[in-house]
Length: 74
Image (cartoon, one colour):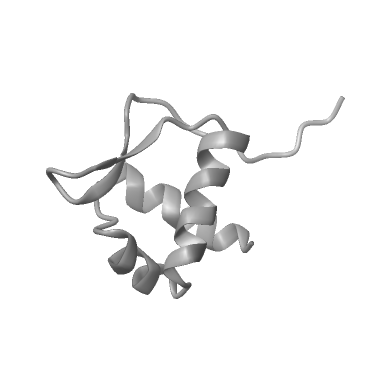
């Protein structure tokens, strides 16, 4: 997995501009299968409320929020 692609995916979801899984795969320059892998990582490992809106034909977050990707010193 490439972090840059995951960050871009999050950006596209937040902007409601992913399109279909095939269109998203083309935007990310990955296979359609990899799109599903990335979405599952967001959902299961990060707890992001991602869903596919069939009416609008794109992925979206079900509610507002954000992911934090940073190192914390303890």
